[in-house]
Image 1 (cartoon, rainbow, N blue to C red):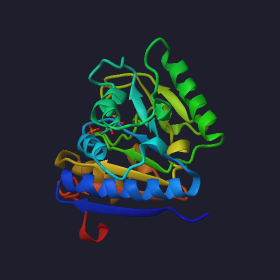
Image 2 (tube, rainbow, N blue to C red; image 1 turned 30 degrees about the horizontal axis):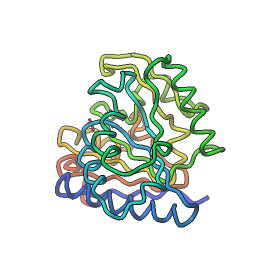
Image 3 (cartoon, helix red, strand yellow; image 1 turned 135 degrees about the vertical axis):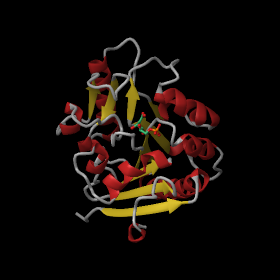
Length: 246
Ligand code: 6PG
């Protein structure tokens, strides 16, 4: 197996980051479609990717009928909540494009316990992929405490070795909601992982993840075994990285 390849790219603003990410999405999705007829991608919530999702909805070349969209994680709140990731992704992207319902894979948050939701999502993944999923692309963010997906430092989700999806009960002040999340065995089996991170207030964490490789931060534990790790950053968030990182 080939080693992981890492790339750190810095752009002048969120707009330029989104344009690059869309080009990457086009390239990776076309490759997957040419090879096997469909493209699989897992998306994160948060504020950072909103412009990316909006711009993706207007990208002309994308083959939505051959694209399967999964969720990296979900706050365990009803769809109507402003904090529901799937709602944000639906409003910014999914309802603006012509994608078949069967290609959408939300994490359930209603009429089900958090535990059952995680189990069901894992079953959905296994029935779709039939084996340990190897996503063509996973889009991740980095939170103010160095979390990624819903993998928070000090929670058992971070050390999960077997399950692909787990519930994340409330553990500390940093977590305002219970959540359901993909785990490292799944994230680190991806073909491509793209961190999409902006905002100068996160510069310290981004330095710790990229430059110091501080392995106590969940975001620094993302290392797709034989895949590609791409950091797409704006100038502000990259301000504490040295030039040779770019
Ligand atoms: C979520 C995420 C989470 C997010 C980071 C960054 O659902 O919120 O999956 O890991 O990517 O917290 O969030 P911001 O982009 O809002 O800073």
